[in-house]
Image (cartoon, rainbow, N blue to C red):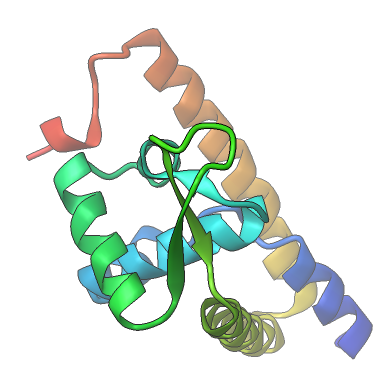
Length: 153
């Protein structure tokens, strides 16, 4: 019941969004940097700054700060688009890839511990219920597009 294979399968099917209290505990600045790195890694090719900020959900000003910090730390690189030299492309560096892989390994380890603590069946139920609730919330938000996280007191 509590085999390593079951745990690996459940970790691989973790919810797409970590629980809000967990995210709130993370340092905001580091989470922003991590979010940008994860997007760059997942996309697997250089992106324009605009596409990156849209994907991460940050403002232009916040994006500029994050990109400067990532570049200063050697986690990302800037380059020109070969097709259009006016465009700047952002890519993840080798050091950035290593940082994302290390972060994901830590998260997988934490989730493995959680699965061992609550049990694979209960964790699977949590994932299924979370997906169902998340989908229901998305449907509700589509009914009222003016409702946004910023409006919540």
